[in-house]
Image 1: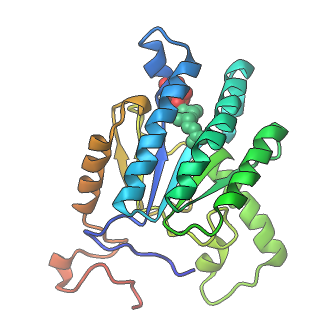
Image 2: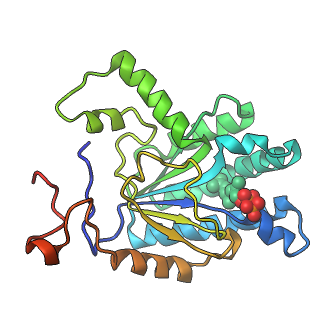
Image 3: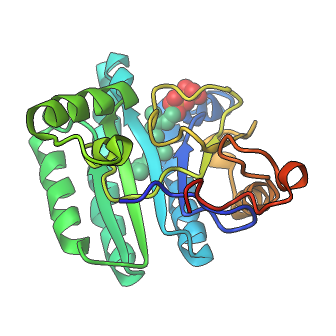
Length: 250
Ligand code: FPP
């Protein structure tokens, strides 16, 4: 896989979202946190439709982090039930839209019913080419780098470009780097999400809680992204008089 350089002004090839604020959205309305997650699922459905219709090739959603295992068991159980029913309910539309659904993260500790739904969904949607939807469950960026490093050390062949070689051991193998990373809910942190993959991502922090985010806000986010000058550590066009979006050794 080549290191990707999505040019300035182009649609992001890969959007990643930290869907934060479900709990606070619910608490502000006197609802349970689980009701907040259900409202978050509706926002997720709208976001998937929006990015698929825009023609974005890859969308990665942070739905359960390695650190979320520290939440009360009741909330974890409700989340797992929600994931099982969401996968069952949404799969037909995803397949109809030509979306391939995959999961990244350490799934070994998940309930077997959830693991089974995850595998079935991956098989049922494999080969779809309109968009790749990746749901990060039991995921942590450090976990990902560590599992890749272990396998790379055991099997890897340090080739001409070792960053490219290493990336093929990450759980996002074959996907472009993250171009746009969105976090809702007012916090300005990456929180151990796609640490390697988002090295050059444009970071968009929205104040809105995830259940409040609509297509209008996502549209504004895309417009903001396309106005960004992407330099990948090099100088801008104005300083060099050369195009600034070509790969450095192109
Ligand atoms: C963060 O909000 C959100 C989560 C930990 C769960 C995200 C899950 C969904 C949006 C459902 C989507 C389902 C699928 C299958 C993709 P929080 O609880 O940390 O909110 P807080 O910061 O206000 O407490």
